[in-house]
Length: 218
Image (cartoon, rainbow, N blue to C red; front, side):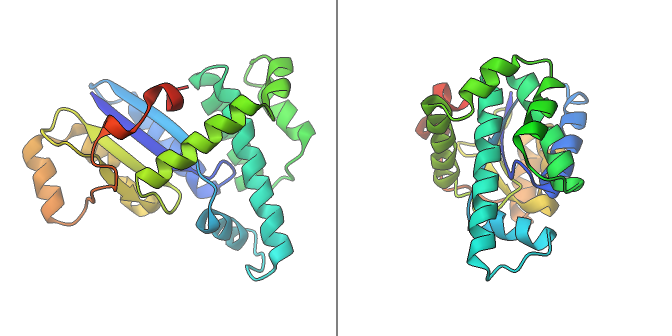
């Protein structure tokens, strides 16, 4: 079995491309794969988002606005997760495509429209958006990211249980994530070869024992 923790900017255009390609490729793998997509809000993800929108990074007001926007989008994604992975992933991709790629303005009307297209329960979603549970789940994701040594989006930590390794593999950035398909198919010998080529890194978290799956597998 393979477990993938993918950390993304919920309105990031680069993250959108990575997710779309990954979800398409998942159907090709013979092995059982568990994919967890977690939102991450930090200075780096905010800065990259500002660069894409041609914003001045030194403008604190703009930075604060962009931080709040990514945070709000993260909570909306976490609220969608309460209705299942399929609905949540569909909503996330729509959100990134419209706000990140097409640069549409993030608004409650847009959020309602996009979530309605997922065929989820809109009334429940609207109630959950700012709930304590959603905020708690978001903070849990930030803790997991910190424990795994995640600093940028998109990044992933991959655990391939077909290989005799006690740790996951950390892939930082869109370029490094291109190695993900190989990791999902790799044998133990190939895994060791990739390590020698410095293609892989160990995350800070040395095993899955430090992760409470009941909190992150929503």
